[in-house]
Image (cartoon, rainbow, N blue to C red):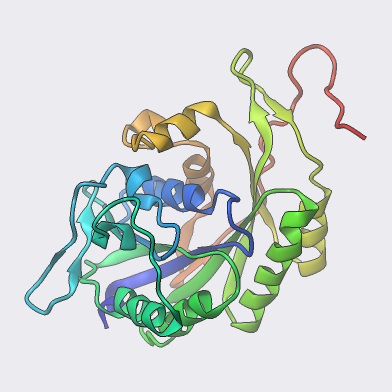
Length: 283
């Protein structure tokens, strides 16, 4: 199994789509690679792969070796990427597959990739708690030599999002996957004039989930127009100055000790309002 050379695997999961899961996965992978950690990024969201666009590797097809295993695309010295999107004929081509076909492809992406020796493998999972995520975790857990398998749960702060995200937390617990913590995404916005963060949404659901399930809030990530534009253009984090908020946070948090990843504390990003008076949330 090609994952025998991987020391740590982090699944980026959410029960809800559209919460910025892929952005978090890409930023985490870039941040680790810029620390000099050998890092793999596996985009296994079959119906919504976006990693190739965000990393600017759309026109680079995946090659295979003599064993017919996929060779990851090398983005920089320390970052290697594999995505289902690299195998599609056209960016607009939909993946119209029933369950057995999807399960076969997922197994191929887990078992038949020629990863180099990796410190970390970041896996961008599809949303939900169905067959696809279940198969991903079960296949990864079959790799007996994997030192550590854990997950980060991503959500926006709305109650409607947490209806599904709370299920993801329970799912991870039932699957015996260690939860590193929650990342709350898009609850605030970076003001383009003063560069401060304006709180837009009530964050009480994040606090409630953290308390109910006894898991840490790792970070609160605001909207940032620069990050959004660069992601759309495939320029995200290509320059050292654009490591971004998540990478900075992860650099403070991740350390290897006794073969496991330890995360300490929590990070509340600056949520001070713009201007002389606080901006109250709508009632």
